[in-house]
Structure formats: structure tokens, C-alpha cells
Length: 71
Image (cartoon, rainbow, N blue to C red):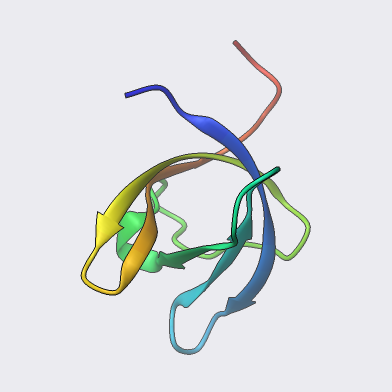
């Protein structure tokens, strides 16, 4: 699966979930369990890479990593 780019639109640190804006797509739900880093918090406006999967309630982000601009 190839990762796509996204931008964190919202993040609730207390509850561990939010939404990622994906260009030309609907916003995608993200749960802290879908974040690959040890630090499982995201910052609003942060660039990320992700895979979109079909979760229980629709599109959900998985394998989320921070986009550090490295290829």
C-alpha cells in the first residue's frame, strides 16, 4: 500500500482521535492507535503520510507517520 499525503485538521489529545484532510477526498478519521510513532499525538496543521482503510464506521487513517520531507 502506498502512503498518501495529508494535513491534520483536528486532534483531541485527551481522547486520542481527530481528522486528517486529504487533498481531493473527504476528511479521514484518525485514532491514536493508527499512528506509527511512539509519540501518538498529532499537531493541527502537521503534514503526515497515511494509508486509508475501510474501518468500522467508514474511511480511517492507518500507518500514520509524520511527513519529514524525506523520501
